[in-house]
Amino acid sequence: SRGGRLLEAVILALIGTMSACYFFEIYLSHPVWSGIAQGIVTPKLTNDSLYIALGILGATVMPHNLYLHSHLVQSRKIGRSFKEIRSALRYNAFDTILALNLAFFVNAAILVMAAAVFFERGKVVTEIQQAYYTLTPLLGTSLASLAFGIALLASGQASTITGTLAGQVVMEGFLQLKIRPWLRRLITRSLAIIPAAVVIGLNTGSGVEAENHAIYNLLLLSQVVLSV
Image 1 (cartoon, rainbow, N blue to C red):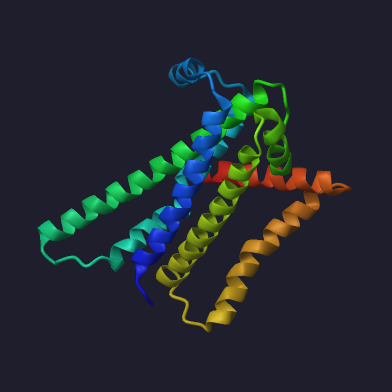
Image 2 (image 1 turned 135 degrees about the horizontal axis):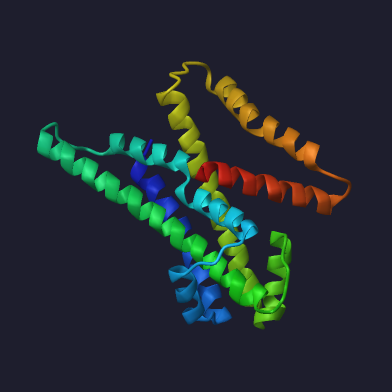
């Protein structure tokens, strides 16, 4: 009811919080910048790391958010002349490119932090919980784990809001579904959750650790699919 600007401000605040937390982690971890620069210029990827890299690309591009950005054009007040429409399109393209690059730098910050903290110390981390609990002893301050937790919370909220809005845009704009909101939500949420639950169930062994590993693999696969 208050328009799209307030919601955009909330998303920007969440992304800003997340970025600040991860860059704080980088400050604490003291990465080798020359090694980072060398890796950017001449990357060396194995089969496993190439799969991870594709997943990172998919998490950065997020095709569903492209629909959301294009939908935001409708909330802008623009004129009807050719010049005004072209100007609005140019600014929207800039907005989309800026958002994707911010996502890239946040993902890069996570990668740099993980390499500097865990890889350099020979720690193998396969779960988010492990990362949270091992940051404090490795970096020598409880602020490291606190910042990591805040970043995860902000990331989860931002992803949930934008993902839900993108789904609404697609359902209303492409499919033109004119049904009751509760029924539409039931149908769309079921289509999103049930297949994921089935795949997790089929790939889950016995125990919590096996279940977490199956969810991790499914998440990584979904990001690679987004990349493709």
